[in-house]
Amino acid sequence: MIDSARLGLPEFAPGSVWLVGAGPGDPGLLSALALHALGRADSVVFDALVDPRTLALARPGAALDYAGKRGGRPSPSQPDISARLIRLAKEGRRVLRLKGGDPCVFGRGGEEALALAAAGVPFRIVPGITAGIGGLAYAGIPLTHRDTNSAVTFLTGCHSGGSLPEGLDWPAIARGAPVLVLYMALKQLPNIVAHLIAGGRSAEEPVAVISKATSPQQRVLISTLGALAQDAALVEPPAVTVIGEVVRFREALDWVGALDETLAP
Ligand code: SAH
Image (tube, rainbow, N blue to C red; front, side, top):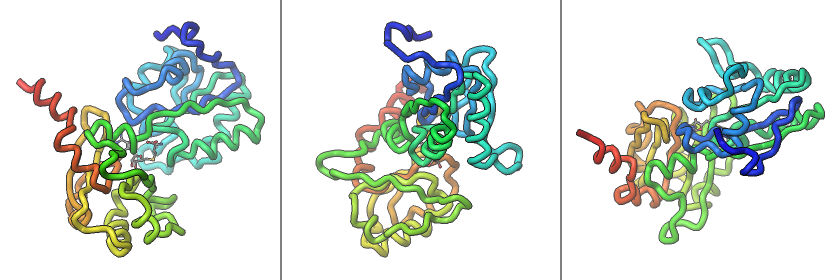
């Protein structure tokens, strides 16, 4: 239990909703505010990407409410989830809306916050470590390095329905930043690679695909832009894809792999 008073953490008021990022998986990456909320929530409405070890930290007696896909049934629609949050809050509960990574990075946290604001429900947004930052750290890949890049582009490879987001200016994306971090991109990798190479990126550029980042099942595939579509065909989701020269630093900085070797019998 964290000492919330000593840290000066705010009260989790009944009738309010906290939109909280749970980070990419490792419960050690939860913020003090996220832990505080887990210890006090009456209802926890969580997504598929929230690690079971994190959910296990919820207050005994808290109602755990799954808002992801279940057994092939379609996932609840976004308006349904927002309506559920509003209803639970209006019943006087402390509602913890727990999302993987950061709630507002490709996580629809903004949409839910807008619905809460429109319904007059008090809410707080607690940022989390997004997979495109935490996952890179656990793969030994610095997101920026002065020798390689002064800019980064975060991009989703998937719009609702699974297709590439419309309206992306691919030539501009290809030129824009030396490092690209792709979320939800596995299915669309062949298309994305084709757009980037057509936009001038080199087929030789190094790429890492980090699957199940920060969990004990983390796997990192190293490839090149040209070989990526083939190499990544069997990677298991969730995965983030990093394109750019920063990937080369992993050779020296793979601290997770180094720890595993130290621990191996
Ligand atoms: N809000 C989340 C992103 C949700 S979109 C965040 O900030 O991280 C879902 C995508 O996030 C996945 O398709 C994958 O690209 C990425 N992702 C989330 N958790 C991940 C993990 N543990 N390892 C690798 N990728 C992850």
